[in-house]
Amino acid sequence: MAHDHGAGGHSHDHTAGANARMLGWALALTSTYLVAEVIGGFVFNSLALLSDAAHMLTDVAALVIALIAIRIGQRPPDDKRTFGYRRFEILAAAFNAVLLFGIAIYVFVEAIQRFTDPEPVQSWGMLIVAAIGLVVNLISMRLLTAGKDGSFNVKGAYLEVWADMIGSVGVIVGALAIKFTGWTWIDPIVAVAIGLWVLPRTWLLLRDTTNVLLEGVPSGLRLVEVRAAVSAVPGVAGLNDLHVWSMSNDDVSCTMHVTLAAGADANTVRKAVAGLIDERFGIEHATIQTEGPGEACEESGQLHS
Image 1 (tube, rainbow, N blue to C red):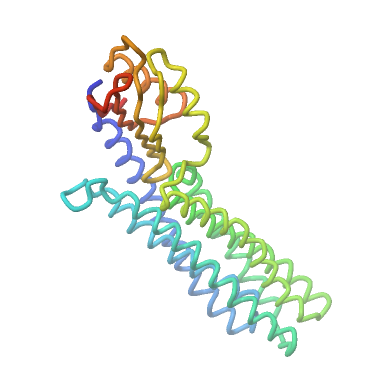
Image 2 (tube, rainbow, N blue to C red; image 1 turned 180 degrees about the vertical axis):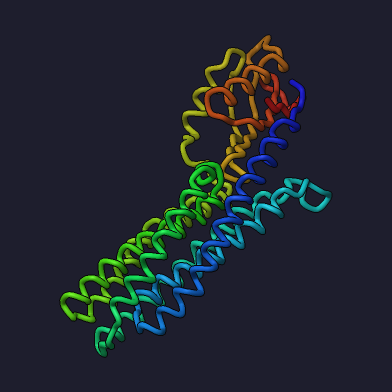
């Protein structure tokens, strides 16, 4: 089966270009609001606003890194990076997750200090700034929705913005509660609640990106199922050295060593196996080595469907 990289490359370039445009718009909106929220946090003395601003800062960092990652990821393979640079997007997503963990720790420490030493909070100012932030986050989320399922990188940025949207809602609720009750300790409670809401989703992103970096089996695939399906192909007598991994979340690769049944044709078996794993498991890039029964590996072929 002939090698075919052209169509996939053009598709990736088109998708990356669309993601870059959406990320650019989201970055412009988020950066503008970040400045306003930081000023509002200090002017109105609200930890909840500053907590939300801290998450907004990670949004800006995430969006900048995501844009850079897309640009670098579009570079073609060369003599030094034979797989290209697409994994840079995974590194960017992992960095964003670690950054969110760091921000959460800061907010928790600051909240503890606020519990022991409460400070006055200007609730109306909190409310106005948070309401503006909610609108900005909703627009940014809408921009990033289309690309979040096709890229860990965009998904990381989407989760950052999504977390801030939840944060804005929390700040609005907190501001109203403080306004009508006068209980300023609600402010650090909202800040902690925002952190606790975000952390589980951040952990999932970090887990998925780490799995890619460790070249683990991609999410949604089970190696035992791939092994059973390939072993059932006519002409396959044995299977070993099976590896399935991904360079990014939409580029699954596979290598395997197939022992042929007596009388089986190597080319026919390789084509059948490559077609099966592409159609059933979405594995587009497969390197399949074959050997006759009781022989050392005598023939190998790299098949790309």
